Length: 120
Image 1 (cartoon, rainbow, N blue to C red):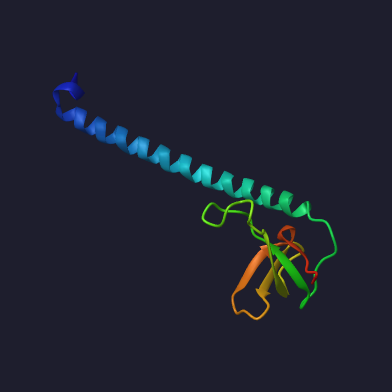
Image 2 (image 1 turned 45 degrees about the horizontal axis):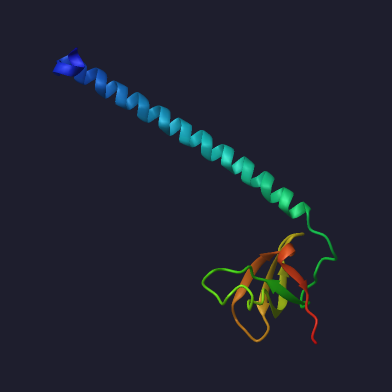
């Protein structure tokens, strides 16, 4: 009744309730963020385990897979592999820094998006 009619104690209890809800939400968000970090790490490790093939060395020429997006040409005409790229640095077992031959822009990509570049 106090909440409905605006008694003095109702304001205190409403403020206390709002504060309790806010604290609970902050705790829940913190817990979710921590759990997301754990899950992201697990997914990253699983994705990196699936790599297969010989690792690339510095200065190797590679092709880079770039998936289709709707902003580009029609899917039929889209060529997903670009290159040649040159391996600039191996950052880890599955992550490489590559640079387009003759270009300046460098990219950090996963091993699964690379393949040896062959000239035709």
